[in-house]
Amino acid sequence: MRTIPAQEIKRRGIGAVDELLEGGPVYVITHNRPRYVILDAEQYRELLAEREEAYLARIRAARADVAAGRVQRFDNADDLLAAIDAVDERAEDTA
Image (cartoon, rainbow, N blue to C red):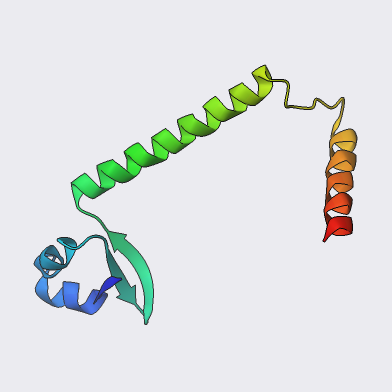
């Protein structure tokens, strides 16, 4: 993990981060903890594209589950919670 103290950026300006960015994201440290992450624009675009693709993949998988009949419908929240509890109990019994 590449890091830089916030004080170093304050002292030297954003140019202090440029060289570090060549190796990937840079964590900015304040009060001895990572507080911010700096990405270059291309890394940020890639991150957004990956997030969008993951979102679409989850939607495709959910639609495939519905089409294949791998979903349950419940009349109300109490029925749903009872089903979740039953699954949890079965999991505990097999553990």
